[in-house]
Length: 292
Image (cartoon, rainbow, N blue to C red; front, top):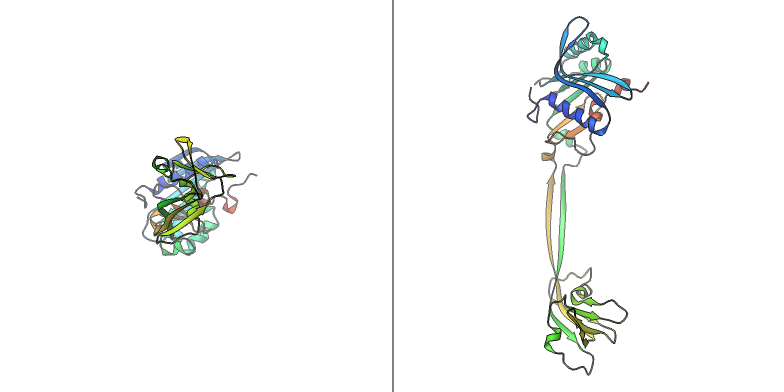
């Protein structure tokens, strides 16, 4: 009886139980597949028999798992209800799981006999109504570039020695009165501030306060008075659209037919964010789980 993940419906039920265990919602004392349970009149094979403790009480859940190509008829729910009645000593709750839905009469039988109706199947178009299926991300990258740096000297200043002004933009340090020393690499941001986006080369200039001098990071004793700095700058603007398709993320959908609760599961059997197995099982309906 394989399900949509290549495992069995019983194994999926085990995943849900494990999820509830990890969340601290319940404490499982037994989880058995194909469990033979003795009733008042006869023995019954239960697809999954789950016994757990919650809020100081013990609960017995009988899962009926059917991978049928047709919707479940009312008669199947009446049979299941009869099994639960024969197991009255355990006071069990029933959970019926199928992939093809239920006929209207089945819903009436289930709602009056402490039976949850679950539908497990691959997602279809109607499952995406009102949900985000595709996300498109527009990425725009602006990358600045600079070239042809020129240093403006104060009037009357002799031409600098070649060894002083050569080096990387990170090595050349501008010391301006009232400001922390900055490398030319850092000053590039002032040459092309946010909002500067021309794609053709433009010459940009900075004027420094009197008393500003240029040095090298590896020899701070060397000083060269400077009055300004200019360079050609431009921005390279690129764009890309990234599409994230949600369909492959959802392997199957578990729906509580009576309540409409839907939980989407990934290929690894874990629910997508926002979904939990307890919500899908909805064991609290019809006052199933109470603290009284």
